Image (cartoon, rainbow, N blue to C red; front, side, top):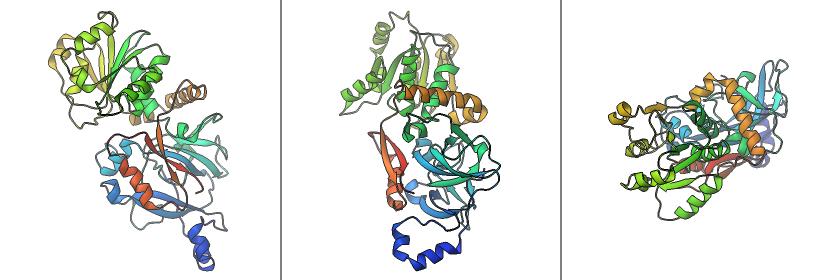
Length: 392
């Protein structure tokens, strides 16, 4: 993948010399059609606050099979930060194509952009189309990029949608969708149990499950304040039951499960885990025989230990799911899923997660952007951080 091709021109220097104040206050537009772009990038792995830098570069007019896109919205996902830290299975894509002497990598893996120019050989994507990235590793924390059509998935119908909704559709909703569909053939009226229920994936699973007739037990971390408001919020999405991790690990939770599932006649056939640790086993022991516990995250950084009794006597399967691999292997299914979820969103059947927009203008300072990324690591948050691009 070649995200963009950076070229610095003498015209940029000339504009700075002729109109220094204008250059500082407004975005520079080259007389030769070059886009002046900015990206949040790293030249080494580490903590976001230590390694992220705002880098400016130029993008030449597209030709041949190249397209130039302007980003509209790019979320800040936990996996993006793990990638920067160097603790994620895939590493950032480093390149010298952005006008640097040493390789740099642009952060972010998810987002939506608008096509603003294209070369003469490009087919199937038009100027003005919204596009999302087909695969992980593109680098979406940037104002502009240049790439080829095979890296992009066009959004065929953007009517009635916000950029924030489209920019966050390809990770969390896809993860929830595939876990609910691909491991167990759940029937209407059957149950699933999940931890991290207030996460983006958890909220998506609640809504999709409700639409498909499944019942859900949703586990959240106990908190000193806002607990009742959180339960009310999740139930408004369609959650049948909301409990804390402490309740799940208590001795009397088995009786509660028996009461909820009509004496066990309504089986819990699927578990979904993004936390790890002993909580997973506390959930798994309530699964029906031959059920599946699917792990897609490890927020507690504690391992999942496999209880031999559940493996041998109840035939419980412990599985892993990674949406990036699934997306790479199933591009056509991904496009169909994205289209379906966006149709639900347009119809008001699927609500996007609460968000904390971070406005990114051409004049926005590096410190503001880096603080937004670093802040994702800190405690309870009222919403997902997402860069929303203005006049860039």
